[in-house]
Length: 91
Image 1 (cartoon, rainbow, N blue to C red):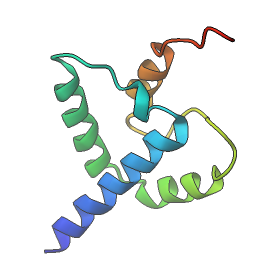
Image 2: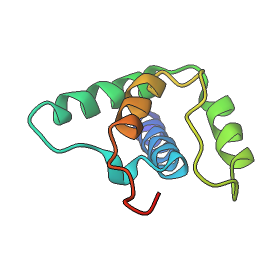
Image 3: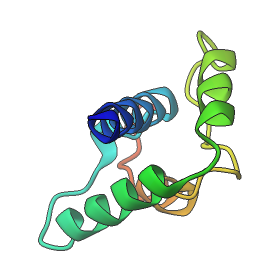
Image 4: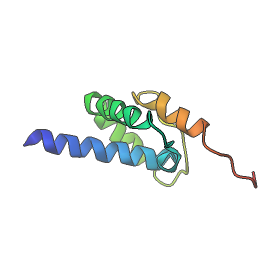
C-alpha cells in the first residue's frame, strides 16, 4: 500500500502549497475547475521534486503569501488563480 501513502503525501504537499501561496480560497468555481484540479493532482503525483517542494514549503513558513516556485509543475495554474482573484476594496 505504499502508493496510497505516496498519494496522501502528495495531496498534503499540494494542500500546503495552496495554503502557503494563498490560493486555497482563490480556486474558481465552475464546470472546468474539476478538470483543472484533476490535472493538477496528476502533475503533482508525477512530479520528481517532492523533496524540494517540501523544503521550499518549510522555508516559506511565516513569510506571508508568496508565488509558487518555478519548479512546481502547477505554478502556471496556481498563478492564474491568484491573478484572477478579486482584489480587496481597501487596497
